[in-house]
Image 1: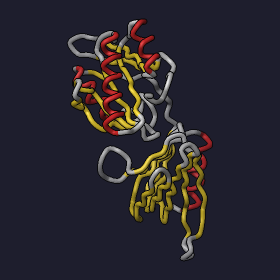
Image 2 (image 1 turned 90 degrees about the vertical axis):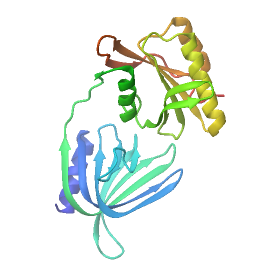
Image 3 (image 1 turned 180 degrees about the vertical axis):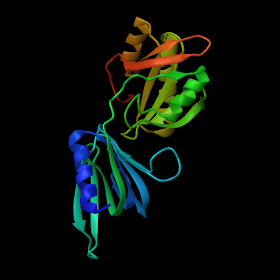
Image 4 (image 1 turned 180 degrees about the horizontal axis):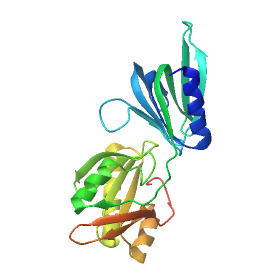
Length: 254
């Protein structure tokens, strides 16, 4: 595919908020809290309607680079060696980050108008549900990446430890039944322990079908977060939907 044709399709996807799949020979440079460089190679770049960009190779589930809520641009340039390139740039101001993808050639670009859906349907036991959450936490929050499952702490075992888009650690507890004081206190202990051990800003998220009013008030006072599940318990457990039912009080633990 010619570079100018690829650019037109990419710009069309950005204008129409379509999902865009780009396959081509590219080098990737990231500058932000750290820096990284991927040498020239064939990769898949995905741009989504929520202004997220991810770069994938033919291995692993997770992208090698990604950025959420980015300002995305695409332009044609000529390198110092006189070679035409297509430059895809994704930028964020807070925190200041930039991903630059330089395409030497494009194999294909495809745009798709995909409807957004907030309906989550998972089935299986609580363990299987936990495994499913480990596979993909993006439906819970954009940029949320799982790090560890069934993390053993001095005061118990945490379901999931993750990292958010700002590099903060996130302790996640999944409850099959209504959450109470004990669940909130348990989550607070885990979050405090992670914060103390790692010295990194730490959040706590409680996932449950419902929560007692008194427990929700306690959770708010701790600066924790609660998401509700539409949870059916039977021979096969099922999550039909998920929603954040209270505003976040604090992003950080004091």
